[in-house]
Every structure is written in C-alpha cells, then in structure tokens.
Image (cartoon, rainbow, N blue to C red; front, side, top):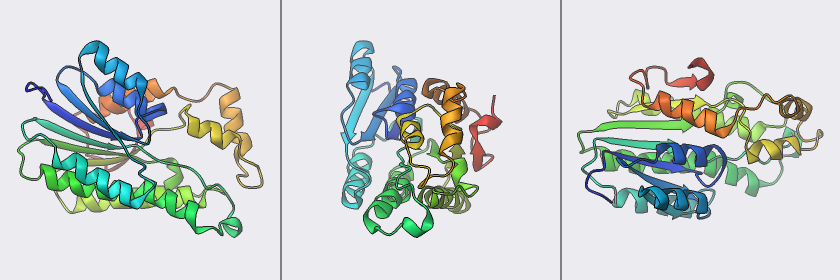
Length: 252
C-alpha cells in the first residue's frame, strides 16, 4: 500500500453490479480499495492496473459463516493506521429464497441469506470498529439496505426480514456511539443481476413479479453507475450520518 494513501475503503460484493460500480468509483490515487467477493474481478484489476490505483481483492463467500469471520479478521488485521479516512461499505446481499411463508421450509437457503445479509455485516463491522478505534480519523460505514426492510412484500419474507434486521442493527451501532458515522441506505431499484433473478421468479413464489418486469420494460431501473455515483457523493457529504435510515432517492 502506497504511503500517500488518505482513504482506505472496504466494500463487499464488488465483483458485479452496484458493488463493482462503487469500487470503480472509489478508486483514485489517494484511496486504497479493498474488496470482498466470491470471485476475482478482472474488470477491477484491469482498471487498477491501468491507472496505478491501490486495489486488494479478497475472495470469500460471505454467505458462509466461517468464511465471513475469517475474511473480517484477515482484512482488519492488516488495515494501515496512517489514513485520514476509513470507509466500510457493506453492499453484498441476496434476495433468494423467494417464496411465500408456507413454502419457506428449508433451513439452508434461509440461513445463507441471513448470514450474507446480516451476520457478515455484523462480523465485518465488529472487526472494523476494533481496528479503527485507536485511530484519529474520519470513520464512515454505509450499509446498503432496501425498501424491502421497511414494508412487507409477499414472497420476500426472508429478504424483508434480513433488511429490516440490517436497518435496526445500524440504529443500534449508531446508538452505541462508537465515534463513527453510520447509515443504512436504500439504493432504489437498480438494474443488476439481482433484478434479473427477480424478474425470472415464478408468480407463485413472488406475486409482485409483474411489477418488476414492467419497471424493466419501461426503462425505469436506475443504472448501477448512476446510483453508485450518488451513493459516493452522499458518503462524502458533511450531512452523512445525520439520518441513520435513509434512501438515496432523498438526495439529488
């Protein structure tokens, strides 16, 4: 890691979609970016190599509790202590399993969703807080949430529950006053691989599928690049952290 680094940014789920766009937007000559994803991303690697940016890619399946715990300890144990700003963006998430309540009868996919959407966030946040506690720096945490955590959507019992848990956990961290600015923010409906999976769901499992198909057909999905730019602008704003549960659509 270069000596002139001013910001260290950690982002999960950065190998595609919104996470990849966020990682690309974070890269510059004064920022060291650390990504956590299941797979190595050639796009990020090429971008960093072409411009001489500082990038470290950690491969880990955050839906696996042991892997999530190991990744948290690995990253934070080597966190440099000389930057002026430290950022953690918990972006990784999954919408599956999609099914009505009487069909959610298999533990494994439910457990994987809670591990990725909630447990991994807690583990990374805990390690992050421990690592940055002694540092005199600007510390910010952005948890990518969803409107699904703020209102019921049939067929999304697991997804709604995990995002509601993420929102409340974010409020708890804020209430504990760790000296960090933290926000759980909904990004709106973004044109990602997750949205593709949603549109392919059976109406029997996800009764609202027609609405999401219509959003795509009518061109109403926001691009990952546009949403990432808005999220990063907000992350850098002096008002960040004032509203703990937020929606990027509240910001221009």
